[in-house]
Length: 423
Image (tube, rainbow, N blue to C red; front, side):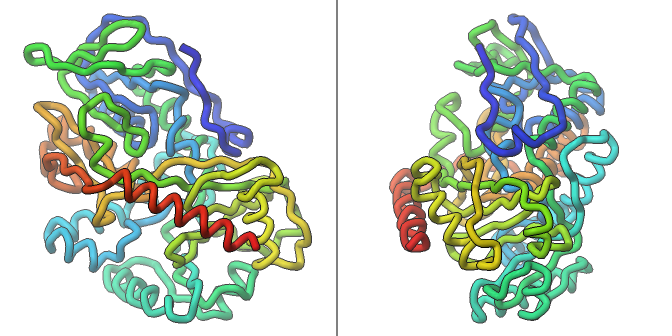
């Protein structure tokens, strides 16, 4: 089967070569991993380094799903403030998750450095920008709690945020020095290269079409043969299909779209001049960053609608005119969207589907850090660490009530937002 690459700007700009491999068929391994994104590849790398035989089966190309369509912001923590995580999970579990994900950027950037991944890694922080004056209260509470935990975060005044972002259309912000930006597809490919070098096997263009139990092993059926494994991780997140009944009903998939300009050089040097990435506090979020070549990347929740002169391109042009009128007409060259797995409480899950079968899921738009951490933690758990190595206790699946209707309602709202902001 021919493996399809993700349809994003990152495929064009990455310098990290693709990692491919054909499945020979009818083999065995200790750990089978379904999905070649951040979580699955991190699990493969760390399991292989611990001496466990493992095999990644990816239906398309490495990073085809959310990992190759990501914005590329390497943030600490989750969308939720630390105090909310603890309130929803309990003090002990919540504090553990906050601590582990607070360290996520360190883990990601250390992996990039150790394995010399060519993914445009820039650790200059990120800015959570206030879309309105009223949103500063939430950012202030986040800053206070992260500072109490010892994190290097700074609450920015309006003038400070304007200077760092380059537009007067913000009302302050929260700067996190732990964070940064990467080419997400380059990072996924780098993880795959490192995992293979550590001894993991990787097969691309190899969908798993059936999964069943055979005595003390699992049988993963592919068009090229069967893989038998003692342990299985389903690391497909928002791109989960019908392989395990009911799993894709455990989250609400929503889309996030992005458009990238041609390189703008000195003309746009005043936009995020410190090299940070940015997202805002809007209910329908807006993101902004530059890449290593000086291209401007803007994004928001929803799908790409229309072609080069369609709704999404008009939306992007209008946003740039609103934020940076001095640039004049900005030409966008690439547009794409990906899927995010949203859970009702905005917290991730590790589901125990059956004996030796687990599915980490629901990063709620924070794929890079949590995906890397959860993959490494699952590998540690399976190679001797046990349940104590996990950032969250493994639980049984819970379906989202009316999840399909929620996704449809979200998509309608996101489309309406594009229309409104394109006027």
